[in-house]
Structures are given as structure tokens and as C-alpha cells.
Image 1 (cartoon, helix red, strand yellow):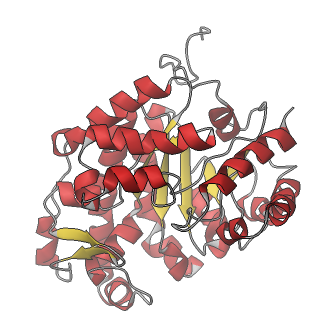
Image 2: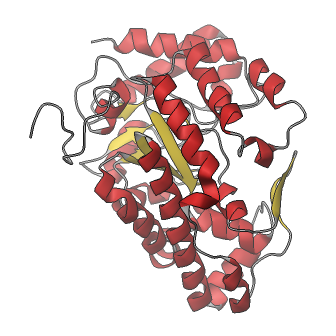
Length: 355
């Protein structure tokens, strides 16, 4: 292998030796890398300014706007990675699903999927369906230089839940009714979504994304047994689809303390951990051979700087023996969060962990 090649034999990118990718590969880093889920968004006044009057889904389809929004937190916070600005329902919208993102509610599907005939509405995704993603990622990679861009997608279970419920759900009663009452229909639904999701991630990687994260926002609603039987095969298919590219694959869900080991087994190289499980305990549950990402409680950022530093020290102490660690919040940045608190947090982690 030459010095200009990554382990997969693909040309080595400008981001290959970044702290973020090194941590994902469980290599020695100059400092613990930091990025934040939802770092590009409503907590930034510059975001609110450029998004003013533009519906969410429309903004996801405007490459210049996507580029600007994705870059905003990198400029402001000096984070170690950018996360592509989009929404998990974008690929569903791209293949013709009638849905919208309603302010204060979230994604709402006009005609929920409840029967086998409804599956026919979920056709394959092509790169042409999401041309704006290819264009935006290409512009971002050029602008970011040595800073990695993380592509992302929603996991099959979470996408299925939106489609079956018709929108966000607290108890996922329709989703679980299909899962338990018509397991073959459920299996076919999440399998089809796995193909769509895998193809969506491929588009981002081929355009230049350095890593990908699969968000399974709602999977914490399941028991380990149900996860293994009804969800894990579809998630594994997504990770398998992008494995040949050799980019780090991150898996994150909320309330998934009991599922951490299984989420790693599904094919993730990096397992995201929310704030409910300390990182040292998470490492025990996940087992060797994986990096971890997380896991400061987002609510801590509303306390004073001394409290933020103290809680950050606790996270870093729990992470000291990890094979690889990417510092993040245990979930996304909240809309009312002070951007300056996030910038101070990045600087503090970098300083505290400098080798």
C-alpha cells in the first residue's frame, strides 16, 4: 500500500489524517475530536437569517443554502467535523412520498403505509432523485478542505415508524401493531427502506463524504429481542451496502442503553451513546473493536461554564480508556442553546485532551 492510499486502496483524501477520522479508526489523536448533532441549525442566528421564509424541505434541496448552513457551525465553533444539513425524510420525499415537515411537529405523512399495497409507493432511489445532494456535498468537500464531512440517513426502523404512524409518535402503536401482527409485511417494509437508505448514503459517500451516521431516533422504544428479530437485519443491510467504501460508519439512537452492543453488531464502526449510560459502561456493553461517540447531556449547556466544565470532565474521565472517542452531546443541540457555550465547550475539550 502506498503512502497515498487509504486502507481500502482508494485514493487518500485530505481528511484521512484528521483527528475525527483517526478517532473513528481507533488510532492515536492529537486531541479528542468534537462535533455536535444538530450543530447546523436553530441555535445559530446566522442559520435563522438564511432560512427565513424557506420551508425546511425546500431548504434541503438548495445546494448553495445547504453548503452555507453546513459550514456555519464549522466557522463558529471550530468543530472537527461538519454534518451534512438535511433531514432524515429527504430520500422519502425524493421518491415521491407525500410528506411535509410541519414546524413544531416534525415530518407528517399524508397517507400512512398500513397495507401491502402501500409498499408499491416506495420505489428505488436513484442519484438523479437527489442531484442536489451530490452537488452540495461536492461544494462542501472543496470548501472544507481537511475537515471531514459526515453524511447521514435515517435508519429503516425510524423511517418506517414515520411512514406507518403518519408522523412522530410517543408509543409507536401502529408501528408495533404491524411488527407483531403482520411480521412479513413489516420485514418487507424495513427491507425496502434499507435499500433506499443504503443508496442515499452511497450518493453522499461518492460525492465526497468522509464518514456516515445512521440515525435510529426511535429504536429505543424496542426490547433487545424485538430489535434482533425485527430491526437489526435491515440496519445491517444498510451498513453492509456502504462497507466497500471504507468510510467510518456511525450508529446512533436515543434511549438505546440496552441495545448498544447490538447496534455495534449491526455493522457500526462507531457507536453513539446518549447521556443515560456512562461511556466506560457503554464500552463494556459494546465490547472491543469499536469507537464510541458521546455523550454530554445537552441540558448541561444551560448551566454555567463551571458546571459545563465539571460535567465535561466526567465524560472525558469515563472515556479515558476507550479505544477511540469522538466527543459529542448525548443527543442534538437544542434550539435555545447559547452558541457561545458550544464554542467554549469545543475549545475546552481540545485543550483538556491535547496530547
